[in-house]
Length: 407
Image 1 (cartoon, rainbow, N blue to C red):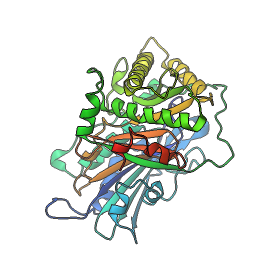
Image 2 (cartoon, helix red, strand yellow):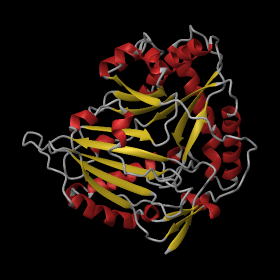
Image 3 (spheres, helix red, strand yellow):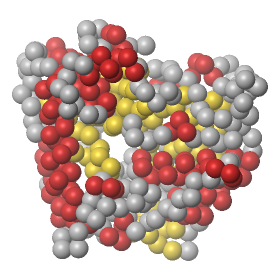
Image 4 (tube, rainbow, N blue to C red):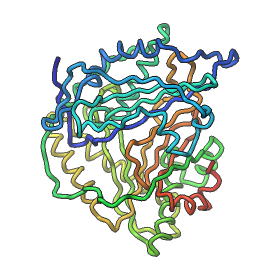
């Protein structure tokens, strides 16, 4: 029994879904069917990742490490094939491979912080969906959990990782009210749909050849292409050029002073934002890439000292979040969000069945103008999942810069 204090200044009350799919067993693939041992090994992993087996106490901003446990579900799909799910653009289909309930730990302290569902298909294939609360675990943290869980199926290749949970003690909770009302409208929001864009190795090389040589990140290039189309879409909807701001979560673990272990488990991912940019129908990808890069560098420099001994990092976080809240409250600004997950090797996750043939990350709470970027299976391209209002998607797909990558 114990209590772990979490850092609320940067911890959204959302859950993320991490989906791994694998095709039926064949001798040529050298994989094995998913078996019950997968579940048997996961509880052993929870010993090291003990906060995931606890419960969140909203009133005290605490995780009560009471060993109430995580949720594990196995289910059998009927009337649908694995190929109907893997690679689909239909977010409604994906809902069926997630745990039945999207737990909101803010609403009920008895809800688990981690839920995992294995869905078996008639063809012999399976999908594992991992659902986790970002109150306590960001993407780098859950990546560490998945890596360790995967490694126990291969004793000779086990990853020697010892997760640490010292971040909350370095950044204890500090309450602050930003004076911004961000409550959702009671009116029913339009349906949000997703579209998968594929940028293979050749496509990235072609795009990079048109940009300045010092453009480093594939994620920035893809973000620039998508943002350009979203700016044009916004102009078509509103009949005028509105300012736009790009938001992007950044993993600060190895960027702080002093740097932290990449296996530090908590929420040390911060949302960076660009300065407002005057939109134009003629805006170019290079301009957007430059803006994103400048925004990331400026925010990283601002946040680098959050763990320095001579600084109260909480005040830095509050200042950063204040700027974020102020930007969000401006209803006349076009907000574009990118979650760049290219650095994480999700396709290396092998739960004893071989490496996945497909994976994706989806937010539980869908938001229009939000895109998730992940590496493709080959590791040399990018899959971009773009979320938009259903009525906006056809025009976006028809954009001349998007059509070559839509599948």
